[in-house]
Amino acid sequence: MSARVVLLAAGKGTRMRSKLPKLLHPLGGSPMVLHALQAALDATATRPLLVVGHGAEAMRQTVGERADFVEQAEQLGTGHAVLQARAALQGGADLVLVSNADLPLLSAATLKLLLETQQANPGPFSMLTLRQPNARGFGRVQRGAGGNVVAIIEEAEATPEELAIDELNVGAYCFRADWLWPALEKLTPSANKGEYYLTDLLEIATAAGERVEAVVLQDPQEAIGVNTREHLAEAEAALRQRINRHWMLTGVTLVDPASTYIEPGVTIGQDTVIWPNTILQGDTHIGEDCHIGPNTVVRHSRIGNACRVEAAVVEMAVMENHVDIGPFAHLRKDSHLGDHVHMGNFGEVKNSTLGPGSKMGHFSYIGDATIGANVNIGAGTITANYDGENKNKTVIEDDVFIGSDTMLVAPLHIGQGARTGAGAVVTKDVPARTVVVGIPARAIRKLEEPD
Ligand code: UD1
Ligand code: CA
Image 1 (cartoon, rainbow, N blue to C red):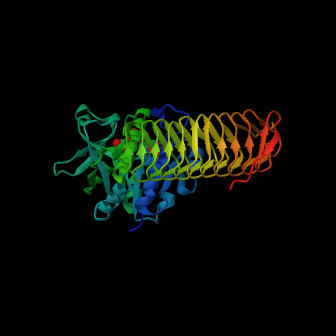
Image 2: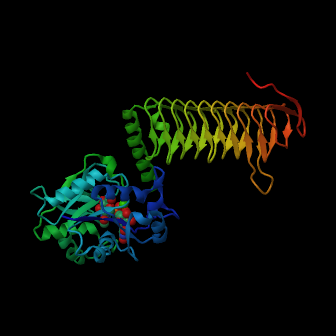
Image 3: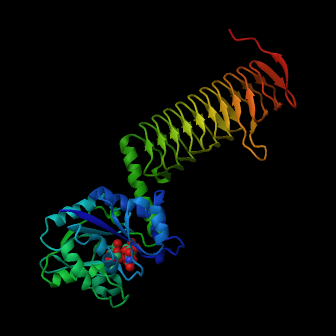
């Protein structure tokens, strides 16, 4: 039986009190809607259909090719939202899996279970429920004398006795398509909100003597629905816990999971230790036996094995193996530190390569530079790479010694084994094994070839 997923994402998300559409608020570093889309894709291996309305243009831009779109021009309720998908789906899929897109932690496995349950159910649909005393505004699920689910009562319409029911409607359903479309036509506006509630389909089925199956969700975290920013923080914490647990089980030490933030796309090697207040974001990959943190942000970067990164910000950079940076180091876009590079406190590197074994211990800025192996960069060294119009390149060959407080005025080339004196302002290229000093720097002697 073929199945398609319809994700409902047209609502405004009024309770977020935000200019941004609710489903574009980030969760674990990516817009909430993408979490739901990924689960849908993983569950069915087909592209989901996204019902958009409020903020449709922004949603389309963010989602791009990951979904097909249907527009719900006016947000008249979840039942009305599903109806908008009819033209796109009728005559196509045998089963229609409908899920609220504001359930970002609902797993592909749960969606699959719902699908399988309906495949075995002769009745019109199956739905997901959860037993939990704290209702968080969810619809209450009523069971009949025989134990079958018979009605969903929305909180806005519930009597005090109904409010006390502790079985909740999670907001995911799998319908037989041939039943769904005509049934949606039968919905009438709700008494209090005037919306067409998808949830009224349960009563419609019950009235026709049809049997609806309920899958009871075991993990309440999966059912965290995001209506408010408080819920968003709850979802964030749950997602983080899930990710942290995974890495600890894989052999990574998180000294303080509560202050460790690892986004879903990140990978970490065995026996790496993550210290408190560390944030690992985006397309970041860390090798084995590293010490990362405390107080560190790594974003879209690759860190090799046995590296140490302390109180640093690393962005779109590469560190090979045994690299040691910080405290208070900043690697910016396109920095590449070779094996055994040491970068101490208050250093900044941008769009530059430091070859193996090179060292910059203190207070330096290296921008748009290519630096060879075993170069010593003295305290306070600056590449003056910007002349007000252009960014100019500095090239420093292997085994160069740059004295403290040297200004390297680019474009500049410093030959192998050369030295600059403390406080030199180097404005002209320096030949190999030449010592330059002063302002502007001039050559004072030539060094012997090493044996
Ligand atoms: C809904 C369910 C409730 C369930 C809860 C849990 C209904 C009537 N109620 O309530 O039983 O316990 O979810 O997740 O379905 N949307 C549209 N178009 C609309 C209205 C909503 O696309 O006209 C989308 C929203 O963007 C959202 C989803 O449908 O992603 C659910 O809407 P929301 O208003 O959050 O419903 P709840 O009040 O949470
Ligand atoms: Ca909701």
